[in-house]
Image 1 (spheres, rainbow, N blue to C red):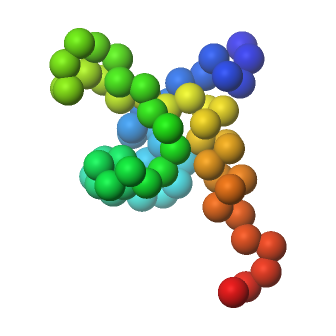
Image 2 (image 1 turned 135 degrees about the horizontal axis):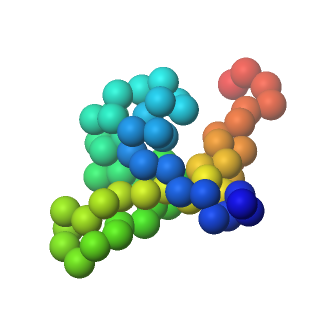
Length: 67
């Protein structure tokens, strides 16, 4: 499977980053974190994250030196 095809659930992203699922939801509501996909017709549709977007977001967050 190609990296771009891999989708993570909210729970999987929370586990990857070792934060609560609620934290991932809060970040998304405040337009923080990686791009997401909402599957379904309503606002309650299932939220998924492309692994490629997660990796790109993580790379942008990386700091070379302490600020």
